[in-house]
Length: 395
Length: 128
Image (tube, rainbow over the protein chains, first blue to last red):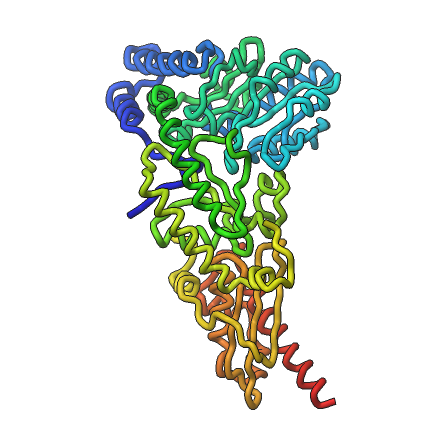
């Protein structure tokens, strides 16, 4: 039996998306910039997809720019807002310590270009405090960027409140909604969002495509020059099949959102409850304000990569914030941001459930995680030290 | 493409010489939990030969495999030969490690050396 519990990394494509893509490849193969009929048909497909996606977010089609995915959208959102800020002499940006690297690395770059950056605390529960955002805004703040839902620990931020604060203070508000689109209801107007990034493969669409929403009046700076596509905001022939696949996938995800969440939340909580019976283990992130399918844990005395590989041997695909899984020396910045110590952060596990997940799979995961954690602790000098009382337990 | 060689996976899945020697003649521990790798080696030495060796490791797949391979490489060998164990020999015996995992083999070499140094210190103290 194979259990796929890594839907936050990527999702299998839904049949509707595959059909939409295939249709583009066979029938709508034209270049949308061409004046002839095949070209105009492809253009029509592209614009229909744009209208559909916009409607699902309560945006208007002109506010959407198709990109190669979430990272490009994050880069362009930050770069554009920074450029707008600089023109007004505003060079302060507020974000959080647990953003995706597409945001954090762009902020590092902007800091080297003269911007000052304030990173908000995300506290032990993985949630930004609106009053702390309010207090951090300065007269020279040009942008606030807070992710909708965290990719690792799944916590869902009070986006509407944060958006309202930014709107009231006249500061642009960007949200990296890569983990939220298709999972949570999003209304860019009610949420006061100026810029939003999304990626199709997180909601059963194809890889290599995403979009950036930019509210009317927020001018985007192109990252790629060379053509008038996407109204000059992103040069290059549009990836029509991928965009059509993305629209079909989003339509389906949004249509099934409520029923999907109603099914996933009890499964998620059953998994959390089961893993909590493992001694010296702790859930990461708030219990309730989290994505319907996200379970994140730290297990004391073991290292995450070893745990992942042994789970994979048992047919379970999961993920970890351990340094060893990324080739970095430090464990996940997200886990450090919520106050986990280095050694505990190395022993992290993320299980992200999807529409295919069953209750039997949850029980199988619990049993296997318990067995593997126990096995690895059996020859861990860190665990021995703590079990024998020579060092204190952290969790 | 697999992350690790078959050899690494074999030693990771079925680590050799796992455990503790309660009356060890030399014990060495290297690494730190902050970096995510700790190795502890226990040696039993008879007539200048590594009669038995056991290890405990907190770490990733390649750290566990490197410890396991290091114990195999020194078991039954004279102390002088064990002292000459290099990280390169550990990595080669595992049919290679990814570049960013080479530090695991370095740690295995250091763990063996630390246990041998502990043994030598104990011998010196006894003879004084």
